Image 1 (tube, helix red, strand yellow):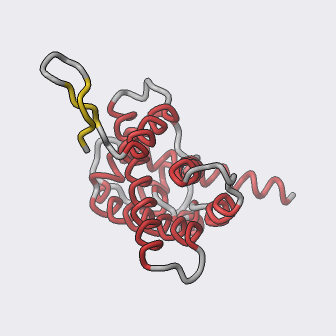
Image 2 (cartoon, one colour):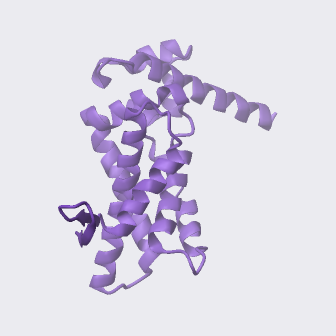
Length: 210
């Protein structure tokens, strides 16, 4: 019976997410009501709030952030792994778990909502800040030196932006490329520090320009 209840809860939660995504397609987030979503999911308003405390939580629920995974993954890193590789691995998996409830066809619309709808964009930023601080804490441990703390914050922030920029590029390209490859390319840019090779007038490499 417990298994059946959990399956029913999962099914209802997924129905709410799917209904909400269909209703917001091409519309302003503020124009879609909880009552609309509940009706489309064939549940009552009270049932909706048993699953999601707010309408925003349907799209960006902080309960989906796997904090235990972040801490464990940073502690279990291989000695030879560089910091960018470790943090990118953590972020990619956190992203995958946080958005596992959304179907592939919803990705472009979800990106629009979380980047251009004020209420959701603000929440997205706050969630990224929470993830950033979790990563920083995992990198430096207790009582870090100010310079160590600064380095960890810059690193975590840069990796978060690489993930965001990579996903944006992937969606703009119609999701045709492999997302993991796009993110790996972004991480490679970060490791190189954006250095690019200059050429002489005859096309030969000359020096590196930062």
